[in-house]
Length: 521
Image (cartoon, rainbow, N blue to C red; front, side, top):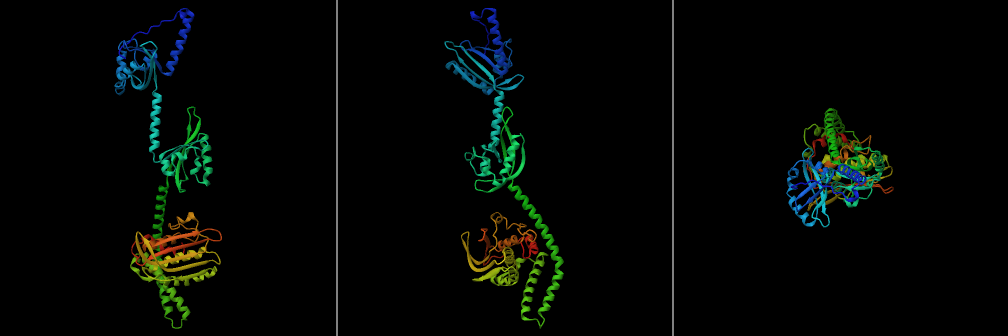
């Protein structure tokens, strides 16, 4: 646009009379008002004379003054430099083809950068071209915002999902694919309740009802289900989606996996409780140490009594062993020595026979058949008191779990284990019972510290310490169970290698907590 000319108005003969002319002017005024409202201007270009004529509306859009010379140069100067570089080729192609269509940026003198859309064509049998310019700044800004939001949605680490007011999914970003395991094509068009546990379906009704009323759900912590059936702890925020008229047409949901945060919080809580237990254990050990020494001395004097019956002497010997075990725990808790120093060659069967004698009265009170099966009893290198505590914990738990007239089997046998390509020999210890079984959702947590199903009588430390002892001896502990009515059972299977003690250190907190456990978990 390098020159200008004054527009001429040549009315047809049919519009020469005043009434027709007034009507034409009225139509033209309406047309100008419509152009101004729609931010549309018209232009005419003569490629031969290289002259352009702009409508008043277009001069307003460009911020140029048609009454002053040089407006074309001003237009040239205000077109964005990157877009101005394309103009010569565009105009050349327009003269050759008779049509033109493009978008460009324009720096308005007072309004800043604007986006314009230009389109035109050549009339039949003429060289001149006619067209329009439309201000599309608002549309471009909306597109930029939409593109930016799309990039955010695509790159977000949070699952971002949209759904309609019936709960049918309409979008599913890559983070949702990673979090829930479903591809977008698997989920779009399907109901959101596919990832909601059945027991929480009512929550979705509550959320949709709130969204329909224009409300919002902020940081609602709940549970969702992955494609593989895994349950995830998530925090969700749900906002209404509205159309141009402000009507709610759906919902946008952001889901964040908070499982790691909850696990960290739980680990901190357990750590603090273990520290408290350790301090309490040390205090208790200190307080019972003196009276314990007195009881040990009294039992020693009873053993030296010449008229003590043989049957009573057997029980006194067993009491002395238990007292020595308690004494060992108190010294250990007070830090006088580490239990690892007590590792020696031993046989598990010997410990099992002793414990069956101790627990036989408890089992008899419930009419439980307690059966020891010592098929073979190889020697292993272990800490005797810890292995005794391990077996006592599991045996006591089984007797507590089994109802009247049930059974508990304690089996000892020689065994081998393959691990990481290596074969090791040792002993297999099996504790099986006819109890009600352990539900699937509990099995994953049963070895966590302070987790117990015994409520008022359990500390939640027994099985945790048992697992810790097995790990310390480089062994393995497996749990199998069935809750099928009439055919329920539980089996703990423990493998202890022949040379296992000392391969992993038992933490000081575990040692202190062990004092409080006794025979219950």
